[in-house]
Length: 99
Ligand code: FES
Image 1 (cartoon, protein in one colour):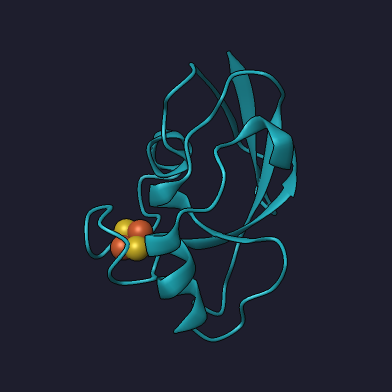
Image 2 (cartoon, helix red, strand yellow):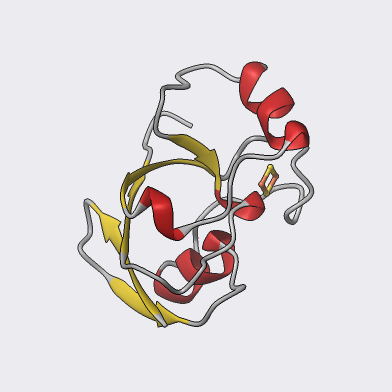
């Protein structure tokens, strides 16, 4: 299990291995945007992983290609729908207001 904490709200949710960050975030914040329903097509689920980056799956080529096409991307950027929790450490994500 991993604790996923959202910034800036501070809400958190405990999820098991294999849960996507999108699913975890939606448990804590049902209004979180995910326009393509998790298919790496829309970029609306763009977040920053602030802590616990080793506790999630690596970026796939499909995710990288979509990240390349969106504005405001940094080294901590991920698409929440493409990231799975490994259950090895707690994770802190920043919900971006400019998306
Ligand atoms: S929900 Fe569309 S890219 Fe993640």
